[in-house]
Image 1 (cartoon, rainbow, N blue to C red):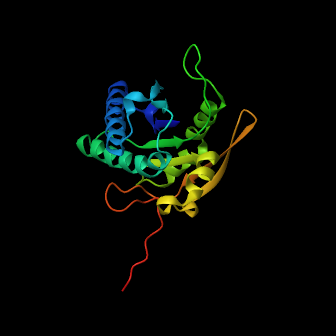
Image 2 (image 1 turned 60 degrees about the vertical axis):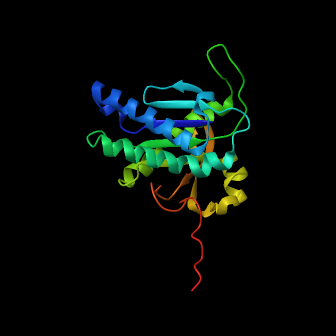
Length: 197
């Protein structure tokens, strides 16, 4: 599952909100395409200031966690460059869990968990404190344990900070990525490679 919210959406007037939605759609579509993720196969639930998406089975979890945030950052940078007055800044959450079909869309505790994570005060604070960040990423404990901890693609678990999100009496564990996503250069979720002299 992927959830994205535009920071500061409610403070924009209607025309800016519409442009922010357009920019978000462009950025997410470009990022998915350049990552090899077929966004047209996602179940997408618009949320006004973002989107909650359930991805189909068989999606490459490593590509989703390692590549998609970087490609999204690059696409957001492009959108922001083309629209300097409307800077997009996003909260991005990634989770893995079971969902079932329901009358008004998928149902399940995984959907509640990812919604709590993307709305968490800790990730909002990450964007407030890091004014140069366009994207703040939080992953669920499941994604951290199964993907980040694999250290495949040189993933660095130390680059994430554990947080506990409490909502309506229920704790949700998440891990916030502490680095900035660079639109250019090497993958930023990995440890630096040693250089040989």
